[in-house]
Length: 171
Image (cartoon, rainbow, N blue to C red; front, side, top):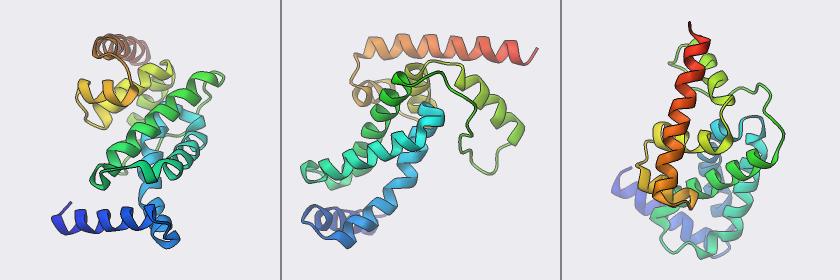
């Protein structure tokens, strides 16, 4: 993002915070695909519900956002927490497509999705935030509101579970 883009985003957030409905609509249009992308690999078939809950929380909390430049990080935190919350309280997953970038091998993407679906939601969350979103462990800890040691142990167990399931699948 360029400096100009940051300034436009800040202006848009401030206008939405002051009740400008057009600005809010534009802001939500920018956020929805991002929130959906964060929720999909964590909440699986419940991703649309998790994204909707996250968007509601974002709208409700927007006035409290003090740093408009932190919008996407703040939204990511809300989305990840909602996805974990919903996935944890719902029944075991059924197969649901997770959006993958178009340049990936569809068969490989389906295999990865299948292995991810077998992991518990809290493991999917740490793997998604660490390896798909590219965050460091400290950031994952802050987003999920967990001690750093807990994130590290879940990440270790999640990687181990993923490798074990992948090995079983691809022998």
